[in-house]
Image 1 (cartoon, rainbow, N blue to C red):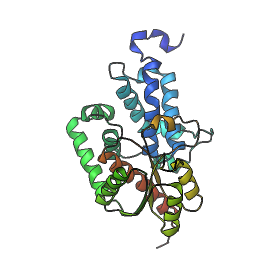
Image 2 (spheres, helix red, strand yellow; image 1 turned 180 degrees about the horizontal axis):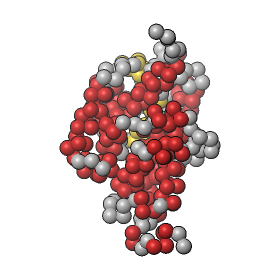
Image 3 (cartoon, rainbow, N blue to C red; image 1 turned 30 degrees about the horizontal axis):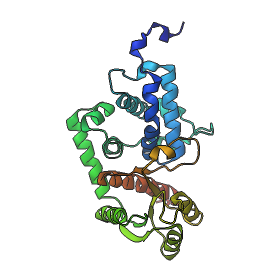
Image 4 (tube, rainbow, N blue to C red; image 1 turned 135 degrees about the vertical axis):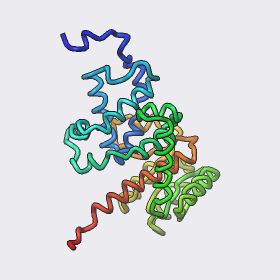
Length: 280
């Protein structure tokens, strides 16, 4: 008999209570790690750990809070980072895995601004006091304020939403080079001026897909992309190539700020890694 044979059923979280929250846990994990592959690998590793030891999740907590708390505990552990594998079954590069451990300020900011947890629930997930959470969020805000400015292309067919996004990103110190309403407009905008970041709606005015437009753009340029959609669960299945950075409509300004910061954070680190080493 395994050790679970000595655990009462009432001490275990039902699988049905966890399942509805997995798409959003994938979103959180992808935002933390910077890629779909790495984020989904960490979620899979978390589920494997729960299968091996169901008591890792506290049944006294709300299922979503308990699931995220378990994930964060494992995310910050050395064991998980050494064992995580990409969906292909190949181990993630050690340097990538260690770099992917997002510092606590960014975890706190993403939990509150992107995942919509209350301050109390976010503090529970991170296993810290509420006053410590406030300090972490303030630290994340300072990181965002110091974010390197870049040129931004907005692909959005709703004029009011496009104007709102432009106001938010320019408030962070970035410059919006163009706003495109259709696939063709997006392509022309990139040919005119290469952006450092793209914010793209999923459904465009001409009935075309923002995903298709971005895929075409990425054939000629390398740029971080943030997708915006009213149906995030449709793009968070983990069964196909999906966005690493995703904003849900209707969104909060802080959500956009957090994801923009995180996308540029990983893009900047990628460029720093690509730079040749100069011997002193």
